[in-house]
Amino acid sequence: MAVILASQSPRRKELLSWLIPEFTIQPADVDEEIKAEHTPKEYVQEMARQKAAVIAENHPEDLIIASDTVVVLEDKILGKPKNRQQAYEMLEAMNGGSHVVYTSVVLRQGNQVEEALTSAVVTFYALTEDEIENYLDTGDYKDKAGAYGIQHQAGVFVEKIEGDYYSIVGFPVGKVNQMLKSFSF
Image 1 (cartoon, rainbow, N blue to C red):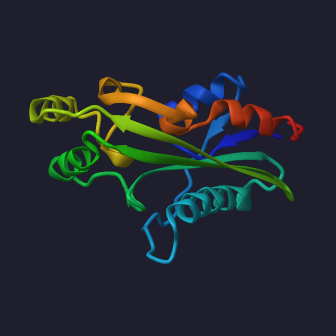
Image 2 (tube, one colour):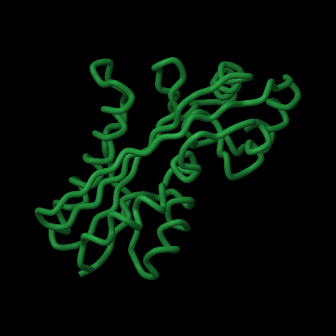
Image 3 (cartoon, rainbow, N blue to C red):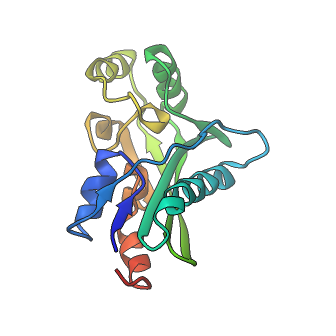
């Protein structure tokens, strides 16, 4: 039996290694298009479920760990920016205000499924155009929900966090540690 992380995120890989020394990585190929009928919470939960299900099809006895993260501003999901301009617009929209980050985690092994939804409210300082442009110059916004990674240079944007920091990073390691206690692997 193996443990499979259904993600190619280097952050999730690093955080899972705190809990489990050996696991394999197998990203799940799912349609992540945001559908209007889903609330942000429903969407993030559904994405994690789908990722776990896709990998479980070929690995029914293994422990699958799947996760998804969304940044939400005024009930609108800010996905991964397609380009620098879209990243700028996202950061400018969050500038000086608060937004919510939801991370859903699904652990699945055979018929046993555990799900968790964690969240955090992030408040940004008022940012100058130069601060945003300098951050965009680093390229760190690419492939990140809401166009930022809190664990890197964008951390200086953050005035306050209410909730699970690791939910913002994309893998609520404390919650996952608790969930793992009900699985045998």
